[in-house]
Image (tube, rainbow, N blue to C red; front, side, top):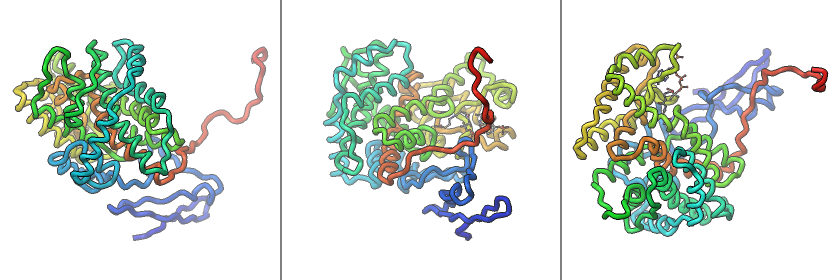
Length: 428
Ligand code: ACO
């Protein structure tokens, strides 16, 4: 196969190297394009064809429905690993030994205290505030309470900062929820595992012994693993972009949370359950909503359907669909919304509009049904996604800094006015 690409502009040819990844993905390296051509650039809105970096963290093949973290299949990780093991794998590149995992867990626990003054910031928010906004603001506020900047050339410094964030983030997420529910804030219990502690911080009642079904923790663990990384998606690219200016880890993650919030990205999980609920309220007529989704005059989209990269199936959606059935069975819950979701999926998979455009259920289509079964409020769904995505964001930020990537600064093609003389206000 050719290892060079030739581009001809105005009769002049230019050659660019083709680089090949470890999974044989090929990319034309256009680093020298502007210099060689005297200023010609490329345009690719939404970066549909543009690689922003070389990364060794996550591989996904949208045509084959493959997703691997550091080479390990998502199916195996979701079935056999714990979220903390996956976090370690993503961030440090290898599955931890038991000794490494115990140390990681212990180090996280040692940092799980959040400065009491952070509560004053939380108090400033109205109860109506969306927890994603609160989480982003609190993550940013962490900088003020941990002001020393990270020396990215020091492994120890990097480790300490990463562990701090992994420790404090679940506390902030749980607080964002408890504030909304007017419940006292909780610091959890360091004798519990990471995911169980998160659950306790979210749900423990001040006047009752905390008890939880193992099925709940297992389901939560699995969901967090399935969300843990997804290469250069919108929020991850945001984290890398913000970090590329050498803004610190907490600031970069705070920006990533905002990017994730949008309904075209992580916010879709909230939008899906709201959509399914309104279909139910409206008599459960899925055909009517299918027609709306296909109508170009109607802004309605089938939320939880379609993906920029997956054009066959989303392997995470497959696992989550089975998990949703399992969790509801284990907890003895019947949710009519699950039947509506399954009905919609069946219709869409047989409809030429969706088939032709390769639109399949994505990770968000069934996740909300599990969150609901676990009593997680709808507005917290995207926060749960952020909790899962945190290790991925950290791993990508770390890789970007370690690879000494340049500041992210795309080009544009200007389409505005040509030069105009300024006229004073009295002459306009
Ligand atoms: N419902 C109806 N039509 C859709 C949908 C949908 N959910 N998704 C895409 N389409 C149609 C578009 O209208 C377009 O049709 P056209 O070719 O006739 O104009 C075609 O499919 C391609 O869609 P694009 O928007 O160009 O695809 P893109 O890759 O830019 O967008 C996205 C992907 C944003 C995920 C889109 O499919 C969507 O909006 N889905 C619903 C929101 C959602 O579920 N987001 C979560 C994604 S997963 C995640 O971020 C964790």
